[in-house]
Length: 326
Image 1 (spheres, helix red, strand yellow):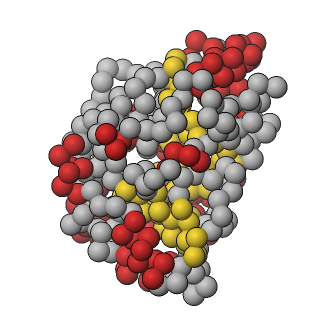
Image 2 (cartoon, rainbow, N blue to C red):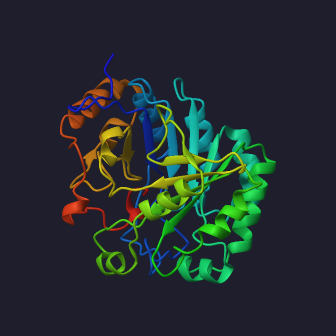
Image 3 (tube, rainbow, N blue to C red):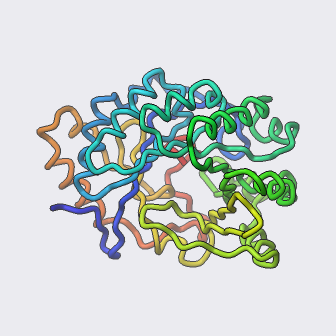
């Protein structure tokens, strides 16, 4: 069996699949001017997603995360969840969302086969949430989190992008929130992308600052599962929730990389900060091309670098995080 393994002996069980680059939020760290259409795009169809997922699953992928943009903007999103969840070999289907449709659809998504939800909540202060995201929807998003827990999701992961001078002093408020709620709160270091150099210089703060505070307060680090994402996760006996830290500038961050990305236009990206994408779409029209798809994936992985080059200020071809799913 062909497997997803690179020249550095890393295996890839986790696919981050973008299904659209359209988003209705205007987050400062991603699309501060809102989504700007660049011509009329033809995003991957449900049939193409089915062939792609089968190809990855046959090579050892067990987890698929559906991302965007905002994935729930697609009218066929529930059908996409069903398609991926019913693929042999796929054990977990997750999504990343801005949360504005969760209150209405969380139960429907759960029934379709969605196992896990990550939702962005960059501040628990509604005014700061509005300032960072460009949308006055804090209470809708929080209602969506409640709806997801009521629908049977055992845990909701909440993403907060750390930004100096905006939300980096909100740890205490976040900790109070997760004390009695099954939330894994994940602080994500602001990452430099092609269009965000000035914002990065102004607002970047290291996740290690939060890590040091947690360790001083008695939090302990959990072991990672084989198909977990890049977060370092911390637990505390007095808290129902957990804290995750995603620190791409930390030493050896890339050593445990287990994920690949495919864009909404069908391009394989070996790294969020890579210099190019490998087109897969010509091999997604029917099931007879699955072997050719697997060969192309395996060949592409031979060129995956040992690490990103963010420390040298090189963010690759990624103009903003919405372009290939963050």
